[in-house]
Image (tube, rainbow, N blue to C red; front, side, top):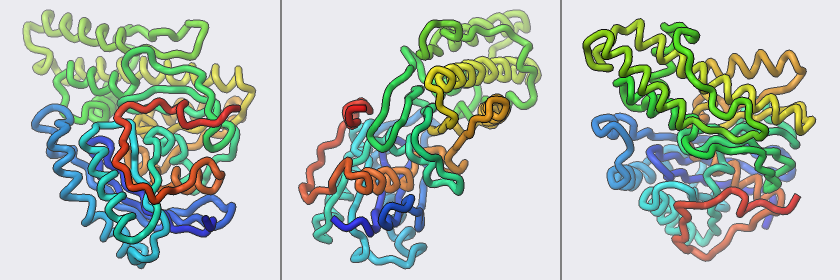
Length: 358
């Protein structure tokens, strides 16, 4: 297959519908031509979390209009598309099937091949969409609502797991702590916003596994500590947690955020020291957190380490990262697109199953 390709990417693993078009030109870093994204946050807010059936139905409504929008923005027609990429997993089964179904239908109708992409690899390679793309090798901190992992990345498909969460992910800790404090959905951004008004040292909360002899994470204990502290405050104030004075809630939110960020920063620095690498890539939704970026930037600057992030609007799930990951896998020869239009999605799919031996 030619290395001059236009790749359409479709993301539908959870509660964002994303479509994007990426151009692959020889050995250059693939470039983003256009992307469109629709978030289902408003729909799921009433339920306090993602409702899988509603998510799937909304993906069906949104994916074709978003595709038309991307084609219009890039002045491209369906006939110009060379490969249709989609998120194969992990994610919600029904939501994944929408993306896979549309991609396979487009591929079959156009006579073009399709390529299933690992959602986490999409996040991992998303900083290559930025104006300051990284270079291999690097240490990657992949931090989102469903995953918290540290990896050594030698190249596309060359991933060595250095550490991962043994229970809750960092984003999950943000979301669940926010829910305990009576904040809205999505909880992570709400907690971070409230934390800006608070004192991060007001409450002494645990930093699980911070002093362990490995690079694994654990946030379940922190969530429990937040719940206990919130109930103590409510009992002292003779009210519910939701009715606590805003300054108290802000202090607890700030202390919670500080605990999560400290663990992420210190573990990342240890991984960099142990690997001897001087480049850190941060990806995933929590990578948009302002405090995390500030602390990583400050600590890495002291050590002359470069830090790379996706653009803020590409930290969340999106079609651009799927198209980019597909382009980079094709470019590196890690994978070939196929004209077998199978709906073989993988709701559970380990990242190490797609890597090559180091």
